Image (tube, rainbow, N blue to C red; front, side, top):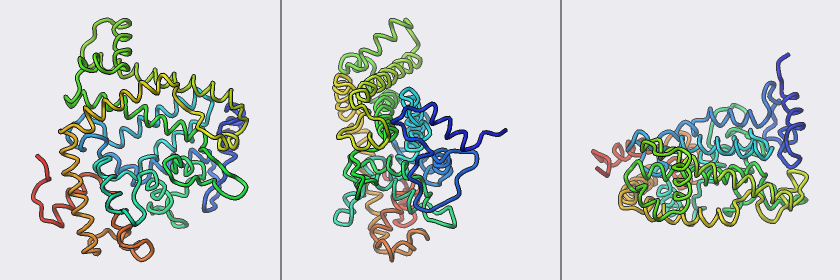
Length: 387
């Protein structure tokens, strides 16, 4: 007999912790649909995300270094896949719903604009006084409205629990469950796991990309960053002298393993103290339960400050990003003057959402290379605005 949804839901009830979010207990979707036959509701969500256009476009969006500047540097897509893998590992260790954590992780950057965080900051500046721009909110907008794949509804019609995870209300966006009779203060544990997996992935892998790009050196990291010092010392003790590529890989793997172990152990202690017995009890907790230990948080803040100084705000990265911001700024102003140049779906939204929001949506959905193509087409630029 094939394994259907009911059996998969039964396995969840048997295997998952009582505070995990079971797919059979979902609050449902905005538009009613027949349930999936061979998948759980969260597995359907994951598949819809992977098959979306917004997900495919992540391949050509900047993570830190401009897309296309290095074959081994991470893109927004490879970062997303790494986040999903870490989220699944943490969720599995804590007996949470892996499918839900994975779906949230895969969708968390769907709303990210081209040119990384510089692009996000520029769009927020352009939309000041008109609702602003924030990529978590935009990810929710993508899955609720902007994707147009199904005849019966806009967006992807994802389950409430995945949309809850994308809202990330700690950034200021209203929690979907906040309302009469259910004053939720947190998201599910699975959403909290995806959020922390994002941080683990980008700090550790930005180390790797920074080394690859020549902005960081193992020598200086060994002197100035305690996380690197500890991991490097352990790799040398366990593996001896290794070739450069292998040594770097094992050191970064060690950093990720340490982060994951710390999160799992610290979260288990938090769950014991909180004595939560259901997913909704988790949502009513005053603070997140998935967290680092105090010592690990201090080490991460040290690493974060170092990466900002040596990578994110470096002349090599900042210079390219500032020139990229000028591309988006010029395109935005061009679309305001010539709305007919917007894509068909964006033009259709002008009457309902206004021209500025339609132009912002259109720009946020672009890949780096399409933004450059549009810049050349509309403004007559003959080459990218950087060497």
